[in-house]
Amino acid sequence: MSEKIIEIKHVHKWFGRTHALDDVSLEVAPGEVLVIIGPSGSGKSTLLRSINHLEAINAGEIIVDGIPLTHKSTDINAVRAEVGMVFQQFNLFPHLSALENIALAQRIVRKRDAAAAERKARELLERVGIPEKAHAYPGQLSGGQQQRVAIARALAMDPKIMLFDEPTSALDPEMIKEVLDVMLDLAKTGMTMLCVTHEMGFARAAAQRMVFMDFGKIVEETTPELLFTAPRHERTKLFLSKILEH
Image 1 (spheres, rainbow, N blue to C red):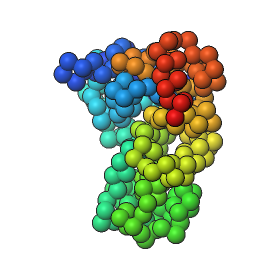
Image 2: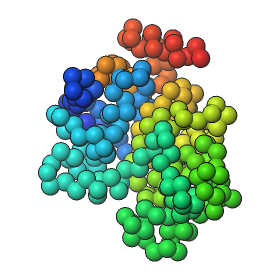
Image 3: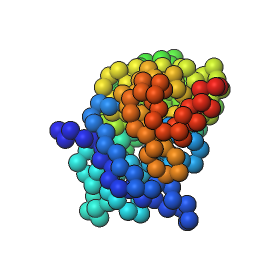
Image 4: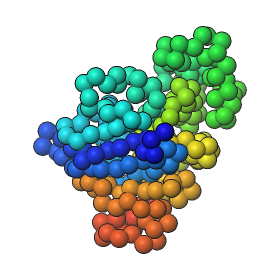
């Protein structure tokens, strides 16, 4: 096994004139939980989306589990099968039950038979704490429950890496904790996780390392303890002073 499951080397990404990622380099070890914070528009989500090639980078290199994403011969779908992603919006199929939402991709991508896919789906609904919602449709679920189904769906593919792009930002405050608890439990299992979030309590509890981004650059990269108690950069201090007030 490579000692780095993700390697990001001098990556640049432009959207028109906006330099969304500006010479970003980062490495992630297997089993590491990395939390990425920063103001809106700092490049956090773009960085996350480039790891499974939802955004194509303009320069630099990204290597996931030893596979370079920028090589023409790379099968991007094979890489994506190893990388689960949970978005702000739940992206569940409204006409499918929770169980069916979790089983579908297993059958198509992992080629599991219906019984195996359903068994896995039920196990994961148990794991995220809503086994009784197996036959409920997304419209019958709260936002927190929908997001837990979305997490279960990503885990059903047995990914090596999980990416979370502000998974609680669309939720009502009382539903945030139930989703963060699932993520915290997942972090304890040794799953490699990259999380873009504003939830500083989760960052303190789960992250082994934190990255602060601004204007497409990594400004600071350190442990949660040092970031919260002794940030080195003025920009980090200013951001934390604003976000920790709330």
